[in-house]
Length: 157
Ligand code: 4NP
Image (tube, rainbow, N blue to C red; front, side):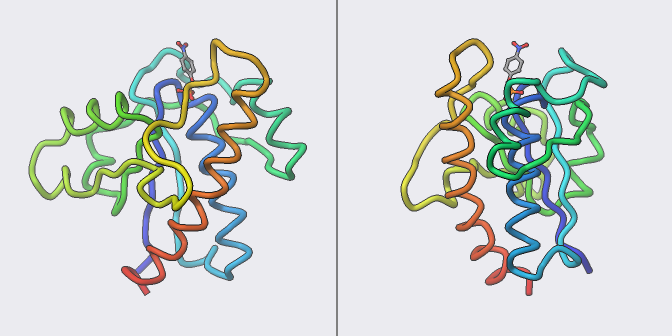
């Protein structure tokens, strides 16, 4: 059975669509793309049905990541469907913990930088800042995704 991973941020237009694209590329690099299903969502519905932020897209494509996802708010059913629900920052994390209905759902929730050896805490929200913020998002995601690959190889396969 496929492992299923959902990345979550606030708007689902900057960080989590990037997490989805970066991690999918890592899965291809490791020959695991057929074994893992990946999606992303927002805790809010602010940008429901919008494509990813154009600034985030242009920074991502320079590193070879095409952001194709369309924003959606997280569904209650996601907490049963996915094996791992990965928050981009502490706010997202605490909102997700608040939405989870039981210990099994809560246990699926993690913070993205838990998988990084070089970064801890939040992936800062780049939406209201300058272009360096988008590069920082990609740097932290690339690093954390490598650790996440190691983690799922140990836990799922
Ligand atoms: P994201 O970034 O959570 O990484 O998609 C944001 C997008 C939109 C807003 C905040 C953060 N907003 O306030 O609309």
